[in-house]
Length: 347
Image (cartoon, rainbow, N blue to C red; front, side, top):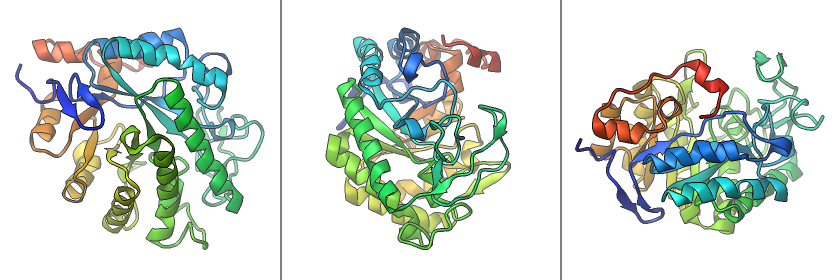
């Protein structure tokens, strides 16, 4: 089958990629003791690389013990954790794959059960609504970040990025989306600060730009991607406040600090109503590497590539169900349909 999506290509930052299929970051919860990566995780990621996935973005990997909010998710803070990821990256590299570590701070989407007994942090002291499915309790009451916290969290991201380089990753993805810590600054429903990190669009974007600048200074712009989710499903369609103005300011700032790779994520939502709509606003002002998709069919993804809107298309559940997705698409074979039971094992 002739397809831009399935063909290999050259990128100035990433080199040769086997296809324009990217594996989206998906929380799986199968880490080993002390939040380490395991041989089973190495099998899981390397099987996708072996079957033609051009770029793998790992499950969210927590930057610091106080940044966690989930059961059994990996970290990349300690020497032991960093060392454990080497089995994953080396296996992926054996298949000429590329792999990025997604760096994650949950912020208020957490509970003291996951943060070592300390209160989660957020832009403001506003508790997330609902019951935390990770421990069947209400979310923890967050503490509004204070002046010293901004440098501390920035350094947590920087150290995690440096550890990822030590572990053999090709780069890192800064998780600025899906309601986690950095997204909690973008959102005026949560961010009620009156200092330089709140209020105006400039203030709400400041923290993301500071982290990006420092991580790029530490490991290089060709190894850094950011993930944002300006439009997504949250009990209905949710857009960032001041969406177009926010995008214009944030993207100009990311460009200015040197970012050249961006992931527009909508998770399990209608692409065309959420991130696809945003991408059509972004592409004219973002000439750099751009990925998105997640909920697209193969034909839709190929259209986004051919139209120049995306450089790679992210697939999530389709790659859980079909490690050999690339080969099946090439041969025109029927895909295995995703079933939630697949989430209970790591194949």
